Amino acid sequence: MFVLPCLCAAFFTTMMDSGQPMDMPVGVVDNDNTSMTRKLIRTLDSFQSSKVVAHYPSVDDARHAIQTGEIYGFMYFPKHTTDELLASRQPKISFYYSNTSLTAGALIFKDMKTMATLGSAAVGQATLQAKGYRQELIMPALQPIAVDLHMIGNPWVNYNIYLSTMLIPGCFLLFVFLMTPYSFGTELKFGKSSELMNAAGDNAFIAIIGKLIPHTLIYFIVMSGLLAYMFVYLHFPAPGGIWRIMLLGYLSIIGAQGFSLTIFGLIPALRMSMSICSLMGVLSFSMVGSAFPIFAMDAPLQALAWLFPLRHYYMIYQLCVFNTYPLADALPHILCLIGFAVMPYLLTMRIGKVLRHYDYIE
Image (cartoon, rainbow, N blue to C red):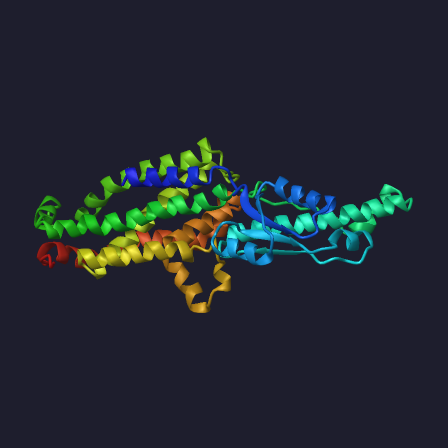
């Protein structure tokens, strides 16, 4: 309830502390070996994400290096590349990259494509200058359309901000999923459920509330610490205000508790209820929609996504904290979390019957 969430927060935020992967290994096959190709190689090596670590004599050797995981990609300069480039005959240079790791593949592809574009533009600029063109005429010829890029919300393309804000609360809600049925299931396992009901005056509602309140208070304290660590200490962007993210964290906790207690009420077996809650918690990371958008999934999966509290946490965070929309715009997701929190109390009589009469089965 306390140690593992803190370890998860420290693990993910320190693992992605640099924001983006840097100095990923790439190789070069330079069969031209001229000052122009060496300059292009140095340009590639100067990029933040790429580091030229090896030169290979052939494409087969470089391909084998990719397949064995030594490099993520390589550039291939055939013979006479510089001659054809200076003669404006459009030489063909090739770059190969592994997309097994999506992030690494995308960043390596971007660097290699940028380097190839810059190289051709440099030669074109030198040629036009030699012909006497002024600088204000050269740039429109080389780049007819200038891109003015504005990345909203996360202009640093910081993967720590992008991923940790979902992974850390997701791991914490997974622990809530597991601990809630465990706390009630162990009452049955150790034969203490009758004592719980006697202490509650044989009132199932009081027994549920009394069992959950201490856990809820601990979860609130831990969640407050995790969110303060991310949004105050690490300065993750929260334009909507820290009070909104705190309120969202508390709402997600009671939603996860209610959902997992509902599973226990429907399936009052310690192992089975914990297994189902564990499955739902793990699937939440896929159904949250941060890596693969929900609207691109099949219609049954889009409907199924509404059953995951983490999905509603992410949508409220995205709308109201990250993009500063009013809470009313996230009302369906807020109501879903409240509905999850209320659901187990519809099964109060069944849970009371379980605590009074059910025997633990190994």
